[in-house]
Image 1: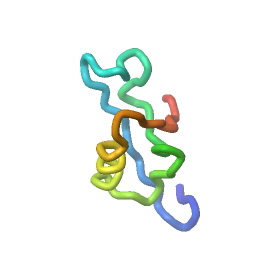
Image 2: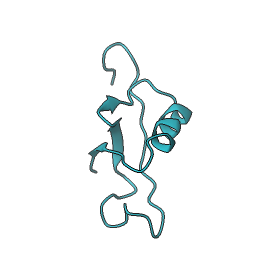
Image 3: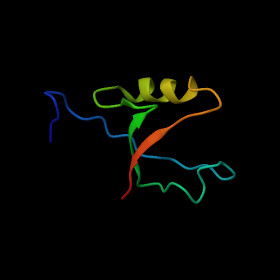
Length: 65
């Protein structure tokens, strides 16, 4: 499947023990956007950098599986 002429980026959630995401996210959930910016077309490393640089507050748009 393609969106906007680009192959969609598939970023699965990894939940670490003790993190605020425990009980909120599952391993099969997909990250669609970070702080209202789509991750479509980004490389995995670019997505990680967006997450790391978000500081103490981040809004993830998630597709649950």
